[in-house]
Amino acid sequence: MAVGTMLYLVYLDGDLDTIADPSLVPLAPGLYLAESTQPRSRLYHAIKRRHAPRRLLVAPLADDPKFKGMQPGALSWLRARRAR
Image 1 (cartoon, helix red, strand yellow):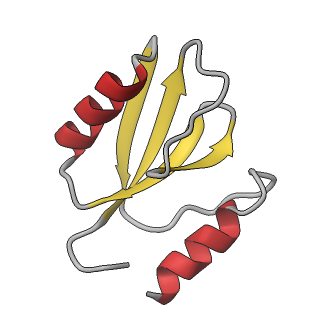
Image 2 (cartoon, one colour):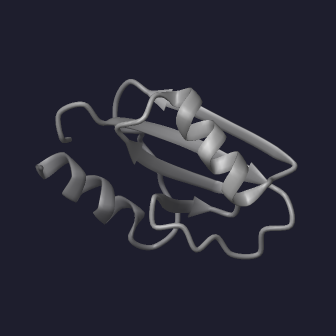
């Protein structure tokens, strides 16, 4: 992970068929990972303005999450991020 970046778990709920947002890595419908240098509040408000979801959760992760059965490419993205 690059210096000054933080990993966040993001949940978006709304009329969002597809999210074309390169800053969000899809895990499952409505569930994403985001890596950002922004503090949580700024990331939250940026996502809120961009996507206008009914429900939104942005939570910082202290470490890389463990997961199984998520979207193809999510684990590869996480591993590549660790290698930086």
